Length: 288
Image 1 (cartoon, rainbow, N blue to C red):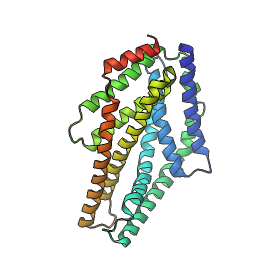
Image 2 (cartoon, rainbow, N blue to C red):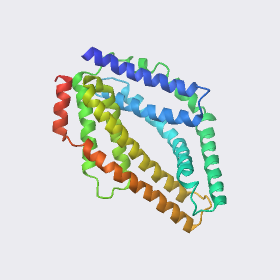
Image 3 (spheres, one colour):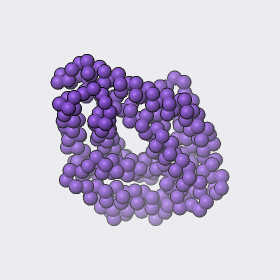
Image 4 (cartoon, rainbow, N blue to C red):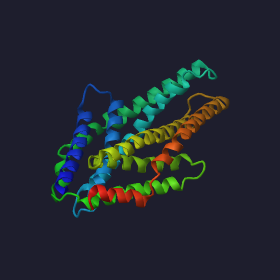
């Protein structure tokens, strides 16, 4: 199993690195979509690279940090694009706001996103920097040491990811602030990508878990996006007066509440197994 799972992790990482290079170079894909795909791929790569963290002299730790830094640079671009999408979906048809102000605000959002993409992805050559970084990425990962993670290292990392996730979930207050929902989302995203990688060990069990996490992380992402959108509306000057901003705040918070009502039972269902029970399943699947 060691060789099989070792080959699989290298193949999975190589695949994600190749996708990152492709999106940077593709001419038939919009910069908005490139940023989205890169950010999503970065999160999966960072989750997979954690399997190497206990291997001496592995380059995985530094590579993980480098990818994290790229993600931070792209975050404002992605948030700006999402803000525009949310405005079109939830605000553009609001009958309680003047049409002229809606059009003006949308144009400001469009221009802001365009400027961020031009300056933060194209003019500064970030897309080519990222592409160069991922050329031969798997060779960089293994050049100092050809050792693969062993079963106990895979088991330990997934076990810790589950424990961190359930600990955050169990400590959530009755009405969690957006930051705590976002922290839970980050941990569950990592767990989702790791379970998706090892699901070949027991497809039936892990498909159920990854399907659950897919829905949960999407909803947690919606909550975070709505919060960031509202913060942007309140921080920037989009031409709305105080009463109009109050309408926008109420509408956005209402959408967050509806989303959380659907989210809570899904989280409860996912975390039915305490860490000890979850670990026993992993031990059986990894044949430890």
